[in-house]
Length: 303
Image (tube, rainbow, N blue to C red; front, side, top):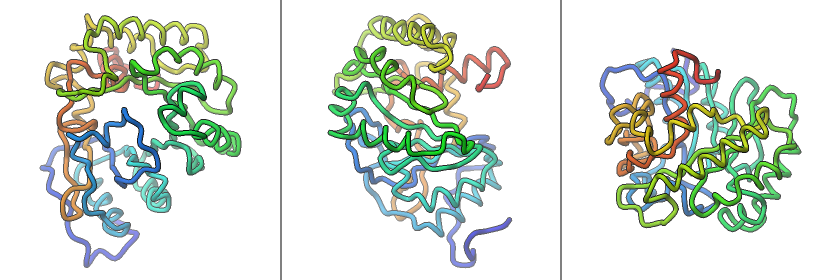
């Protein structure tokens, strides 16, 4: 094992048992410069409330040890805003065969050839800025256009659809379709069991109509919108429990290791990548349904 730091004084990571986790995600910071209402990281019931931080040396060493123990091949770096700890993330990414980043884009778009960077935007300019803050849309646009589009980094724009911004789906695609990115993706709000935000759909049949809007823009812009129609159909009210189960029994994300920073600067594992109190019956995480579709079809998830 080749380490970035001396290991003699680095404590052992939390014991998560002996099972393999082909994929994992790591919350590298609780801090974010935005405060989006739909963000699962800052829900009151989410375990990711501000806790003791883990320094760079410890996190690098622990990620390496967890990789070796659990045979982790892919890692998703998130926050908070992970680019607040950009140097740490760029050092940690080569530890894994595949790495990806989810960022709000306001700190620029990192150049990571061969890897994926997902940039969050939540609608056309005015709608996005109502959710994410005044001036955020233009700041992200500047960052996207400032990067080298030929550097080998896969850059996706992703909109998290809620009841609040669903009317802006088509306008969002029209506004960003010519940006120099690999494509546009959609995921849906993941509510908690006792969710009081009014951002989700109490009756999933109402969400079905919004899913149809995403399918429509996919058909209109098949080369720009990367969402899989078969996976979107699985999200509908008559089939969604196939992919999730009432309590996450069939959810593919449960095979991932979610690493949140816990008390004393140690990693802790949550029930779900979206926290401990998620409502699996109303899950909107596109990755869950896309993964289930491909597992059933026997095809790779990027097919």
